[in-house]
Length: 316
Image (cartoon, rainbow, N blue to C red; front, side):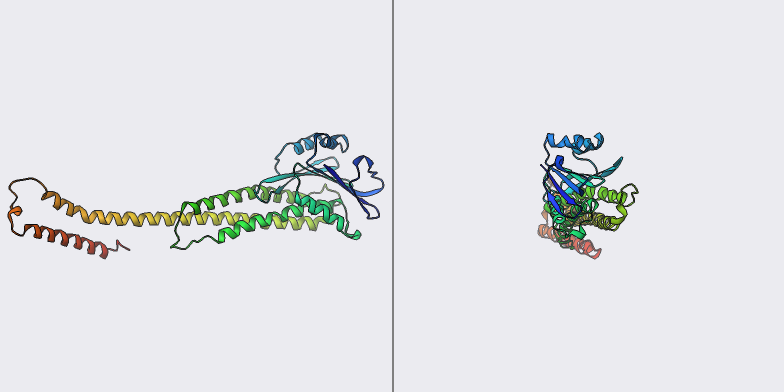
């Protein structure tokens, strides 16, 4: 589907006029949006707009890294919009030419619809031009990054990291899932941050200086987002290390307890083994109270070792 938004020189707006019927001499600027384009519609990039073949190839090959290329008087941008549920990146391609804006995406996107609607309801004095529309698209795209980052941050803050918390496999799995989500976000946010840095420092986009403060604001948002993602990744590492330390400490405590019990019973087992041998001549076997004496000796030995280990702090 191709839809068009045309802003006349008197600031009037018309929508969905066929590209072939647009008279560029009578308009201020126009925006053409290619949403889920068919093969025939995609060919208009070459036949009508005459874009560079490399830019068209990048549009049709999904998924490119965010970037900006300059072709004569046309500036080509590859950007990523985030899918709300899966955090998968949806590619949005943008052509900025003299007096027009073209967006190309293989999936219908809410960010494009919202920017489109906002241009339509703007009062005439605020309909600056196609660079304003480009700013709205990128700004809406970046705005949708924040809920995803905030949601992960809230989940991280809910984790119980107290010393008496019990580590389980489910909690560790959640931590690793969040690290995976943060990695997906980082693969989108950091290249977008670099792209905005290139835009605000570009000297080749005509009329950009007038809107420089708007694009700088988006770059500041992306800087904040990238810092939040890195901070949250560090937090997941800390939580993971904390749980691993608790698990290791708990295992050490269990092993220490079992070691103490085994050590106490080793001499008792030795004594029981001696008197369990089937020799005929063992003097203690003929003692009237030999059995009770040996039991008492074993009990005293066990209690003595217990208090000695306790005195050395092995049970702490």
